[in-house]
Image 1: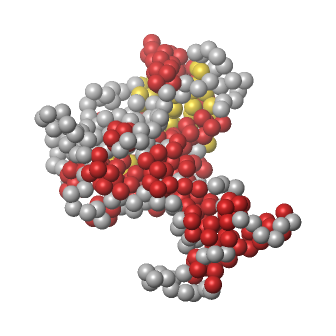
Image 2 (image 1 turned 180 degrees about the horizontal axis):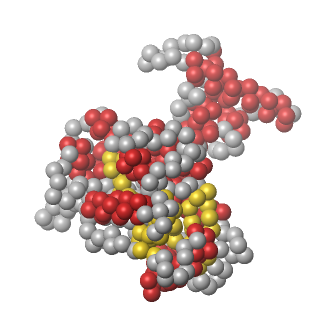
Image 3 (image 1 turned 135 degrees about the vertical axis):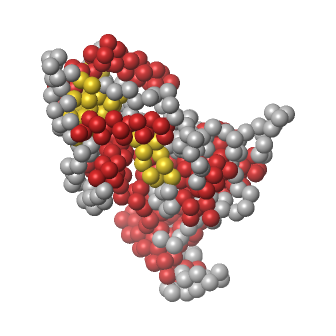
Length: 427
């Protein structure tokens, strides 16, 4: 992630921004980017990640302070390789990059129609860069005959009441519309690339497309189309086919792959729209909650590990095993799920099937027929909650276990084995 601020330079800070700054403390803000938004959209029910990302907390440093650091993020060798490849593409006035752009987008090769590359004020803050990008994009879209390359533009996207600043590698503007260009260092071998890496790149590019769609609709004074598969042909609006520029085979010569991101765009829009507003989440936090990772004058941490743990646990999480590869706090949340015996540790599919059964112990007891929930439906537990959901889940588990026992030719199974089978073979 890039270190930046979401408050415009010289402008007054809004109350929400001030509250988020208080949560973060004096540490530099970690801004949202397309990678983090793609991961956030994949788990919109996780209030913990939404609050930490909106506040710009360094989750890697936080996980280390909590005692469960995660080997998360890109390999430094992959990052270095990507930077070297991109610098070669953009050397000599983008000479190497123009080859795939001409092949796929029709960028002219003659000097009669030069490729314009406006200055986007890369040394300025993100708010200033975003304003400059919007200005340059509007000017480029106003001339349908011109070809314009926006090198590392800065885009805005409102996410759950907070503003995220996004930086695609490039935009090509022609005919009043733009195309997102993403430069990746993974190779294209014999015309195909790693599907997993292409999928991750498509999800990341879909976030850029969504930000451009919002900007184009706002500039035109129109609402964003309800159908994510419909392209609004507005000035400056993006095409839903993006261009991935990668090394060809095992060399450094670039090649391009056109990728349709409409499906990823629809998923991103749906997931981000479901996210709860940050303001509502902040109101639910107990007084004194913060994630200050700074040190005092003596070099000691301003907040103890116990205090940070209490602050983190005050924000509800929605853990699943997928979090281990998408969130820096995944290992911490997994450890908490195991300590609390929660069924979330077994995956979203198992969690959904178990209904009102919240712990593995309850699920195992229900599968073995020893749970109080199997004595009848519609009962009320001691804490006053309706047990209909637990009863139905217990009935489903018992039925599945009976079928399994019959298939194996046995009359009964022990609680441990029976529960393991009913939970999809996961102990």
